[in-house]
Length: 413
Image (cartoon, rainbow, N blue to C red; front, top):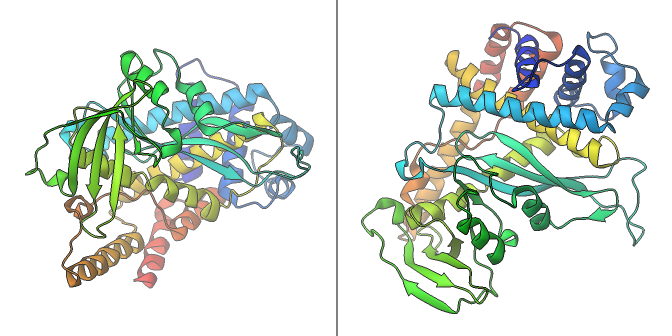
């Protein structure tokens, strides 16, 4: 890869026409402007337009803001986001960048963490019935295999509040939605016995849940199940059982005690062919989606809605997701080609683990074995994002930016 701007334009052009025939140049210009706004760290739409007046993708102010309310452009952004996701998944798969490949029992599943992410309302937003402004946002999904993120559905727009679980069910309810079986790692607010039981019975749906058990959930029957206590993945598992609730929904219940903190957790899942300890640890990895949201807010500075209304929110969310995914692609694959690592993040993780190991040993405890395995935190440094932005906006050769990035990394060590 030489020039980030050219590479991104070419990749987005491929995603724009995936899987249909090629669209027009106006659609590509619209998409590149949206991605540029996320990359540029602009404080406002007017400020962004003023900053790109001299570029190939300049656009009149009225045209730009009108496009944010277009259902057609919303569909263009959404379809391109899906196309880019598929393209990058194939690239990661070919490069062997599957962070869960070390666990063969998970091979049959896609593993996705889902959670809601919200932003401050836009200017001139409508007030709710109490006369107050509310944050707006939607549900995102994080592919725990490759670290790629996708907007799933809007949950809150204008002044109408929509429950996250209701929005999630609207997106995934019904057969034929999933090509490969998927484990949904979700917050306990997403636990709806009737919905997940229906998913389990509809084999064409292929969706399974993993979550914490709510405190007020009381099974009407419980059958203790055997599990391999010699499997290192099952370290910390106290019990494993089949439970049935009053609604008739059946789950597997996993009681797990963290060997580091001695804190107990109880998980519910509809997955029946994966080690209970590995499932418990998949829930621990769910926190990685929070790292992604941290990049959205604090490193890409996307804290505020671009415009009012559902279409504008959907467009912005798709632009943020596409930008993050391409950043991840250049970080994981391009830096790998130049044999450069995010040393700041690697060093921080290693030092953090060393402190935790020492602290646990002092009180005769230990870290779970899976914690010690190398894994990707789906985080990226501010220094890397600045390097990417510099390359994109000035269209400098990528090879000229990376030595400076390495120098900055070394300054932090």
